[in-house]
Length: 164
Image (tube, rainbow, N blue to C red; front, side, top):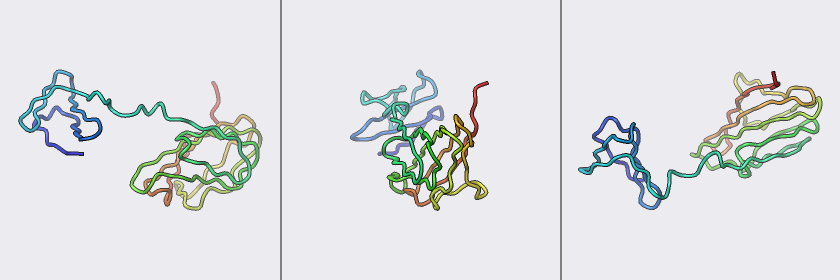
């Protein structure tokens, strides 16, 4: 990617690339940008701005015992918990230097929980999450890493989701 300096303070981003898409973006469609003696209006190349993140596949699994979730199969995983989870880990994280986030949506089929998460997972104050211990319990956790899974940050998003 080639980086360019914009002489106009109304710009929000300028991206120029040789073999992929490029875009010149401004705060309003009528804003003119001056880049290296050329003037542009807001423009996105015919190749498009990139893939739609809402088209990412999700995965759904039914589990108990030792559980291994494959990140490469989807960045959102619906986990139907059919028995106690003795250990939970995620494999196939992207390489170091890439941000990876995995949302785990747990749907408990009974009074089940999680005994252990992977030992490399870091929890706020060192307290790992457990599941709502009842059939129909719904909980969400987000895992993220930039180290290829060497360090995984775990955020408990919500537990015991219910309708009102």
